[in-house]
Length: 265
Ligand code: KIV
Ligand code: NA
Image (cartoon, rainbow, N blue to C red; front, side, top):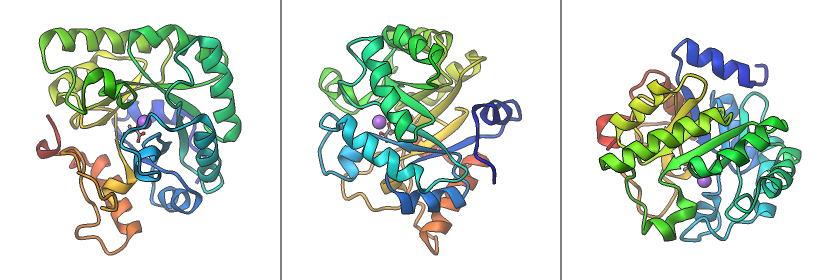
C-alpha cells in the first residue's frame, strides 16, 4: 500500500469513510498497526503514562518524543504519523513551536499535535504556513490537568460548549488539518464536526459522529494496568491475537460500531 497523504484524508472525509487512529510508540507495533490498516499512528505523549509509568503527561520531553517518533517511523509503510508536542515545547511562542516541531518532523512525523483552544491559533497558523501540518487537541487536554482539576468531561455546560465551538472554528481557520476532541459530549462533538468544512475531527470519548476515532494502544489491547476510562474498549476480548484485535478495531471504527453509546457522554 502507498503511504497515506493529507489529500487521502480529505478524500476519505468526502466519501464518509471514518479515519482509524491508534497510538503507537515502537517499531514492532508500528509495523503491526500498519499491516492491520490503521490510518494514522499517533506517537502520543500518553507514553508518559503507558510506557514510563508517570501519572500525567507532564514529565515527557521533546527528546522522548523524538526517540519514539523515530522508532515508529522505521516500522511504518502506509500509516500517516502524528506526533505530540510535549508540555512546554510550544506554549512560549510560535518560534519555539516551529523550532521543536521541526525536530519531530526530522525524526519522522508527518504532522504534530498541539493542545489548546483559540489562543493557539496564531502558533498553528505559523507552523502550517511553514510546512508543518497540525492537529489541534481540545476538550480534555491532559497537559492542563492541574488547571482543569482532573480528567473529566469538558463542554458539559452551555458556556463551555459555546467556547469549544468557537475554539474549533478558530483552529480550523488557522489551518489545522484536524481538531481532536477528548471527553466531549457526543452531541456537541457531532455538532462541531458538522460545523467544520475544512478541518476533520478525531474523537476519543467524543461519540461516533467525529470524522475519525483514536484510542490508546495499551487500553485497546488490555495491557494498561491503570483504571480504564469509560470511552475505551478492550478489543482483545474475543480476539485470537493482537493483529485480530487491531483489525477488529479498524473495522469497528469504519462501520461505526465503535464507539457505542456506552463509550460516549
Ligand atoms: O497522547 C495521547 O495518546 C493522546 C490521545 C489520547 C489523543 O493525545
Ligand atoms: Na497526548
